[in-house]
Amino acid sequence: CIKYIKNTFKNIPILLFPMVESDYIQEKEFLDFLNGEENIFLLKYDYDFKKIRAVISKSLFCITMKHHPIIFAIGEKKPVLFQILYSQKRRRFENIRTRKIQY
Image (cartoon, rainbow, N blue to C red; front, side, top):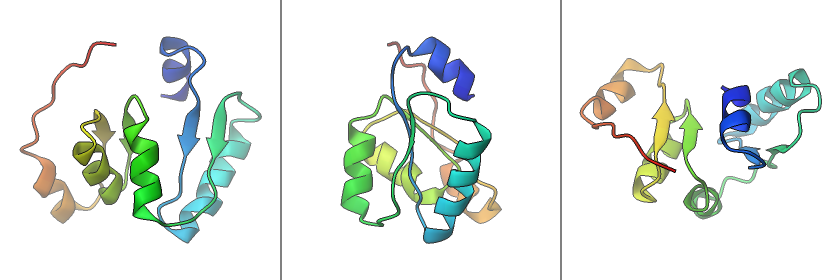
């Protein structure tokens, strides 16, 4: 997914932002796994939903496995690609219609 995004959208930064404190560790490991890929940044954990919404509002799209970024992206009218592993939460979004966005 990262390579596709980097090849399709040249020179855009990819931001990883932790939603809970434990996400920071996992995202840091993921960043280390990418072995110095350019334009990929890990934001410091600071859960202030207004800051996260501001980041999403300036983004082209949002890719997430978390519940709240989906809500934030929808609220900011940004395309969102998501997979939620929790079936109860996933059912809430099954009726969202997808549409192709041209860039």
